[in-house]
Structure formats: structure tokens, C-alpha cells
Length: 284
Ligand SMILES: C[S@@+](CC[C@H](N)C(=O)[O-])C[C@H]1O[C@@H](n2cnc3c(N)ncnc32)[C@H](O)[C@@H]1O
Image (cartoon, rainbow, N blue to C red; front, side, top):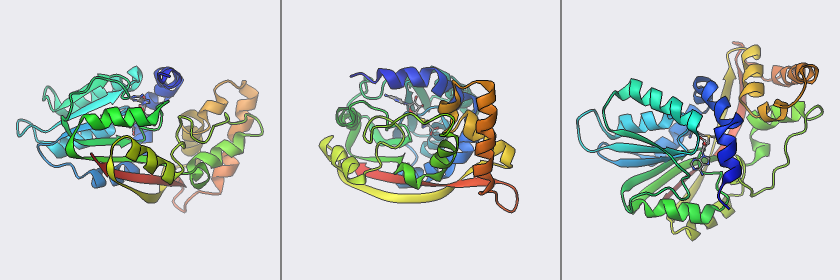
């Protein structure tokens, strides 16, 4: 199997939604990515591979940490299958660094994209490694690109039930538009919920010192209820369910999401829901 379904999704509706809502999605998940960045501990001069880098938020942050313009050899390769998201990443990298060569972006399937052996100090990802049809060969391929002793640090979601940002809006619209059934270990956001399974497949891929740390933090969904309804139904968890419904159903679904989110409005009016992730570290 060659990841075709995911590649199609991230080059059509999925990728287009992420590119359109890039700023707001980055704001929502940045605190979780920062936990993985702290675990990765990139230092000036290092080479980092950002897997499934999407619109490039973490590529930019990693590039800032591995080297100042013209200094050292620090570099970041952002690898992703999604053309619309890479286009956003390219524009942002140009704006941030101009012609400075410390950032390279490549379009390719990370499970098989040619990568020079032992060429990276760090393998990093913010929610970009949960979509491989065959995770063990994919991680083994990525591990070969790491120098011996090189570090892995990524974040992925824990169980759906522990991620209110996903289940609150999805369950709210379920009576009108049921969520797509998800096989527990099939490619998708929550496939690594079972920590022991994730640990075992990283070992099988040839990595050592595998460690999973639970990381729970609220996710900002909008400065107001309107913004949060917009975000969760257009770019977030319920967007896929609502993609095909008619106008009338959509209007009723938005009102159900509004009711569900209204229970999570903070005193200053912003809306936040709980998240739960694994911050995963390992070594080659
Ligand atoms: C949830 S998004 C996260 C994007 C980005 N890391 C961020 O945090 O904003 C998942 C990303 O993984 C990418 N992706 C999915 N399957 C991939 C594969 N086989 N190879 C490379 N990237 C992949 C998608 O295109 C998408 O950009």
C-alpha cells in the first residue's frame, strides 16, 4: 500500500482547509508543537528533518534555532505530500529568511522519499507521522536518514476520548452527520492512542531509548463563540462530516456545535477545549 488515500486527502479538501486556516490552526496547536521542540533540543549547526511539515510553522521555528543567517551549517528539510500546504510553507520561509539556504522544502511521501543516509541530527514532527499505511517500514526509512545517535522527537494525539477538541464538535453534529468510522490502528489522527503499540513499532523500526510522555493542554479555538464554531466546523474536527451536507442541515449542525461549545466559554469570551498528546522521543 502506498499511502494513496492520505496523499489524495492532503492534496484536496484536507490540505486546502489547513492552508486556508493556517494562522488559526497554528495558534491552536503551537503549544503542543513547542513541547516536542523542547524535547528535540535543536542547537545551532544541526540538520533537522521535519516530517509532514505542512504549512511550515515548525520548519520556521526549527530553522531559527539551528542557525542564524550565514552562520554555521544548520539546516531544516521540511517534507510533505501536500502541494497546497507546501505552497504556504514556501511563502512563509521566503518571507522569514529570503534566499538564506537554511530551509529546504520538498514534496514527497516521507515513507519512501529519497533521503541521504545518516544526514540528519534530529527527526522532528508535529502531528505529521500518523498517516502511513505501514508505519514500521516508514519509520525505519526515516531512521536511516538519522545519524547514529541522532534524536527523534514528535507529537501525536492520544485517545480520541481524551481529546475534547475533537470529540465535542464531532459528537455534537453526529445526529445530523455521523463521523466517518475509524479503525483503531488505521492511518488517522488517533491511530497512536495505544502507547504500547506505538512504542513497539518504533523499536521494530530500529529506534532505541523510546519514551512517551503524556502532554495535556487546553486548545484555543477562538476569541469568541462565533470564531470557535467557525474554526471547528470549517477547518477542525467536524469539517469533514459537514463537507457534503445541504445548507439546511449545515445551519442546524452549526447551532448544535454552538450549544456544545457554549459550555466551554471562558470569562473573557474565548473558547478552549482539552487536548491530550504523546510527546515521543527516541534515538537511532
Ligand atoms: C495534521 S497535519 C500537520 C501539519 C504540520 N506538521 C503542522 O503541525 O502544522 C499532517 C501533515 O502530514 C502530512 N502527511 C501525511 N502523510 C504524509 C506522508 N506520507 N509523507 C509526508 N507528509 C505526510 C500532511 O500532508 C499534513 O501536512
